[in-house]
Image 1 (cartoon, rainbow, N blue to C red):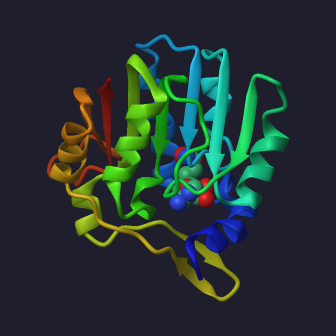
Image 2: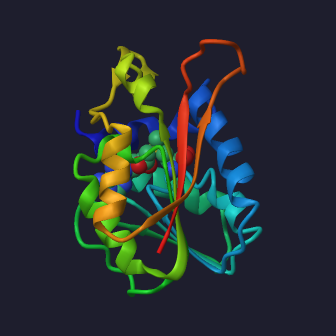
Length: 207
Ligand SMILES: C[S@@+](CC[C@H](N)C(=O)[O-])C[C@H]1O[C@@H](n2cnc3c(N)ncnc32)[C@H](O)[C@@H]1O
């Protein structure tokens, strides 16, 4: 099954099934972004709007992009305000957003499905205002090396999604190529026990 179809079928249970990655990502987002002020936000791979609900408590206007109509429907039902616009879009194609629109671009748990990071960083650079931030929270590369990937349960067993491994150097070199400066990086664990593999990695880049 392709990625878009998989998310269309995962949408019904995405917010409610057991998912440590989703839950930790919520904490990563609030803890990291509480430090910043932002008005216009562009949310990449917004899914069911899990993070939109918190972002709109701080932002003036949010555009959420995603290619899964079913994930977007969940988001639209959850976040009913004219301060948020959910728009169907494939992030691997040129984004139909005004240049210099965003004070903040967020991308959570989505880049594992996108092969070409350079394209994403290039688009992000164009859509950010000068001084704008690009926040990323993704499955940690070490967690990816251990075989972890997006998956959910179906009536016919576990459905694993198509993913791409991104090394730490992939993120850093795509940012450098596109003039985005790293200003924050963190590794996030389920429990702070010794020798545990971190589940998530987060970055904040600045234009
Ligand atoms: C794991 S979900 C994360 C959703 C949300 N960001 C969150 O943290 O809960 C990944 C989302 O990325 C979207 N996605 C993956 N590849 C995409 C692409 N090429 N274009 C647009 N959306 C994409 C999927 O449809 C899905 O909603």
